[in-house]
Image: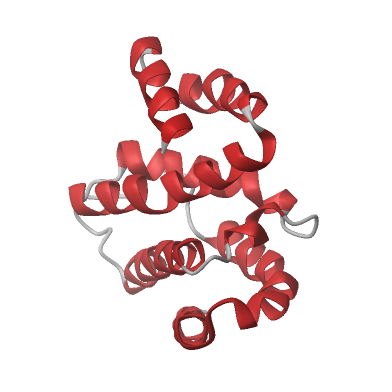
Length: 161
């Protein structure tokens, strides 16, 4: 799966929006498969947890984040909101939000927070307006135990970005 994501990243970088229709078809299957195998919480740590399987899942997770980032930065983020992909949107947003708050590697947290989440949220705000922000604050940020004043500040910045 990592190899497929790397290939798709290369195609996106080479052909930009020309691959939109192909990605619109394959993205739900790819995202669904990845979301079904990577953990939704923190990878185990400590003695005996640095197995080949865990390392492969961590690589898959990191490559998936890169894939989402490449899609968002190459004007393909509308795929996240297409009818075929809508079922993946909430689990992806939850995974990104959780990772941006809880991942053990601070660089991964920063990459996820400032890359995929902000790009995807800008697109959703453009498409759904303030209804998205109300839903995001009430469901996403409250689930992540984000302080209300910080959530409001973030939403204001997202509106003007």
